[in-house]
Length: 239
Image (cartoon, rainbow, N blue to C red; front, side):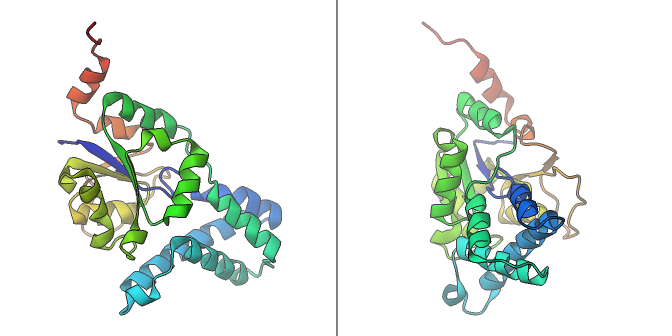
């Protein structure tokens, strides 16, 4: 593989979307995990519905708005009382999601090796700005790309096209990394070299396409890089 840059999905890949379950469990004992899972599923379902609609530009809503709508639906579906205070607390928790423990190490290593990295996310710019700053990732990222610019959510080709345009290179030279199998497959269809970070050991989605590589943590990104990147990083500098 000729990998010249790495592009990460944000939610679920760099940021743990289910870290909200801890607060949800405090607010609704015995229901935290169920609320978190349904909230995430409905959030992604809404992105697909608005993008697939006949008037997608008209029906488009920023990811933050869809996230709130998904929370409201999920609480009602589970019979949970979602007052304004609980809603605001859960939404604020989504602004500051936990990160997976190996992420900073991997991003720092990419920077050390001179491999530009970025984010391509359904999240709107304001969401991503807060999340990246909260995680302390800003100095490791060359680009933070939001599909908001296209008013199309992944897996629409217009969303994936943001990566090659930003890095000024073909999609095949960019390693697209996602912990969401559907996203890794969508990026593969578009033309990226892909890595599915299958943290939970889930089965492959049966869509007739597989990601280029499958791993279990973000550290598997480093195994996808050309050997010359590692050698160059290890070589002593001349004086």
